[in-house]
Every structure is written in structure tokens, then in C-alpha cells.
Image 1 (spheres, one colour):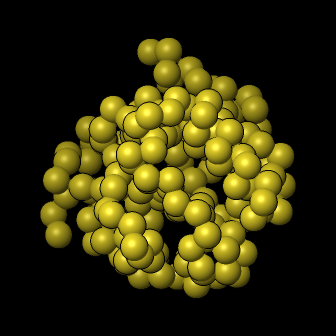
Image 2 (cartoon, rainbow, N blue to C red):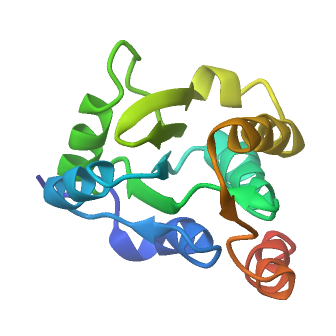
Amino acid sequence: MQALYDLETVRPMWEELENIGVRSLKTPEEVDEFLSKKGTLLLIINSVCGCAAGHARPGIALALQHKIIPDRLVTVFAGVDREATQRARKHIPKTSPSSPSVALFKNGKLVYVLQRSQIEVINAEGIAKNLIRVFNYYCSAGGPSVPKETFEKSFVSAKRR
């Protein structure tokens, strides 16, 4: 499937997540591989929409500065990594497809979903608090995902441009 968006136009939107330690998955096979591993996995379905930029990515970034985070952090980009996004959504049953969205898996089983309808009505700090609560319950890996200086340089400064 061809991407719906120009890759260079959306590059900053996926680099925001890569800069804070989130790996971009491009194929359905990569999605399956990561979801088959033991431990916890945070899966982010990224998007070009305003709530992804204003709420989801900043909230995720703040949450990943916490002392407890998931073992693995991955993302697919809706409208860009279309086949990978379709496969990711198959692992989130009984949930309407939405982007952005965030899902947490433990040992390959879905344990938590934050959908676009929820993301739209809370700010970045609220998303971070929500995710931190979930991380504290399900996760045990040490955080943050990147040092504070890297987070501030790569994420916070980008928001000031």
C-alpha cells in the first residue's frame, strides 16, 4: 500500500518519537515479531492530526521520563506505514481503529488502550499521568527512555520552534 502522506513532510512527526527511544516499525512482520516477545510493549499508532501533536506525542514523551517504563517502545504511523498499522490494529480487538492511539501489551496480550476519543479530551500532562499509572501497574523496566537532557533537547526544544 502506498503512503497517503509525503514521507518528508511527516518525518518530524515520527522522529519526535524516535528521538525519545521509540522504534518505528514499517512492516506487518515487524509488528508480529515485537508483539511475540515476553515482557511489556508500548505500541503507539502515530498520526498527523493535531491531537497527536498537541496531546499524544507530548504526553507519551513525558510519561517515558518516568522511572518505570515498558520493556519495548514501538510505533507505526497511520497513513504512512499502512500495512504495519493494519496489523497493529488487529492486535487491538474490540477497539475501533483510531489514530493516534496507545496500547500496552504484556507478554503479547493487550492490557491497556488509550484511544483518540480519550486523547482529544485530556492534555499532555493528563496523558502522561494516565500512562505512568499504567506503567507502575504493568511494567518493571527502568526509565527514563532517554536522559533528561536528550528529552529536553530533542523534544521540548522542537515544540518551541
